[in-house]
Length: 553
Image (cartoon, rainbow, N blue to C red; front, side, top):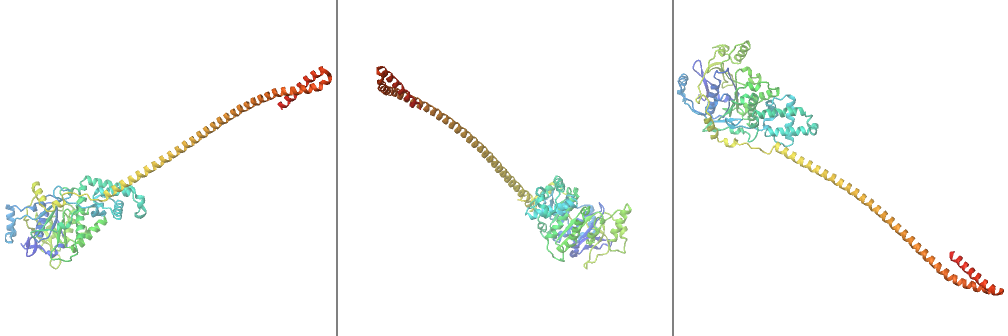
């Protein structure tokens, strides 16, 4: 409640109000205490007052009872006793519901809350995936390659596609980005699959949360954004890293405003010890930087944990508003932790802080807030006010009605799958496959053409050889026929010549015989009739012999 324009948390042992000065509320704070000591009630009382001041609030609902702030509180005998003890009726105390908006990264108990892989970044994502330093460096390189190639990493399938593409082309990237181990790529991919199995796949995607939607008011009161973490808390790394991402996004988004009269937003980080468990040095440095600088953006951060020793000293030193509920010391280590917690307070001579912390009851705390001058107040034993909203959880029906009544439900209810790395790389793969297929077809066609050309050449050679053989055969046949014709012609000529000679001989014989006979007769007439006859016969014979000799020649 507001009292004297201050954030009234409770009363000290003297019945005086213990309050936070609004302009010091962004100097961050710590709410610590063992289980069952009343931390959740304290968070509610603070959140209600911040809301009344018009300051939006973020809270993680680990046990499921923060969501009851959307309902008005219920009167009871115990509540009446507390109202009377604090004199709340005089200050206008009344039960009332608060403007709330329920969120859930799994989309089951609140409006679906998403971010993109790119917005989460390699450092925080490495922690979620539980990667070692080498694997974290490889993941950082993959993000750099994605940025350099204009590839948007929206969801886990984008990141897996990017990892596969980088692995496939690692030799091409090695010169510019260094050696990329396929084994590390495989480990990262398996870690992403495990995250998807645990439900992380629904967390990464579009539409991503716009934190400007959290800087909202209803009827002048700041909206209390409640993240259901009852399931999320089972994955401590995802829970704490997500909340750190929210802080980082607020830091990046919010402008510098310097010191304001009151914060622009209050962020409660419940189960804060999960943020620091096994956190690498680089992450711890980032947390310390964000906590140190975000107050200049008008954001106050309140860490809630069981023991202050859960918070590293560099961060703890930034938490100036302290509420320490009861701690238990069963071992020397526990006693040492309580002593350290007590020593972090400015000593109050009225009581022993160490003994007081050990003996605090439920709803009691040792408190120290910054004063108007920025100096921490002395430790005060404080009795915490009761909340005005409902103390418990809400039914599934009430939750469903509250979720769907929000103006932000329609904005974030349905996932959108944009054209990002997965789609681009799929197209590249299809294009590469098509190009390879075309090249293979072209090579096959060229091979077939070469084979066809070779076969045609063989056929041409074979045809040429056959034609040559046919020509040779034809030439041989023609030669043979010519020879045969020539022989026949020769024979015919010989027969003709022979016939001619025979005819000549026949005529010649007759002529020569006649001539020879006449010559013989003439010559033989000198020897009488016998000589004439003999001369005629001899002349005829001689004439024929001369003729035959001439014909043969």
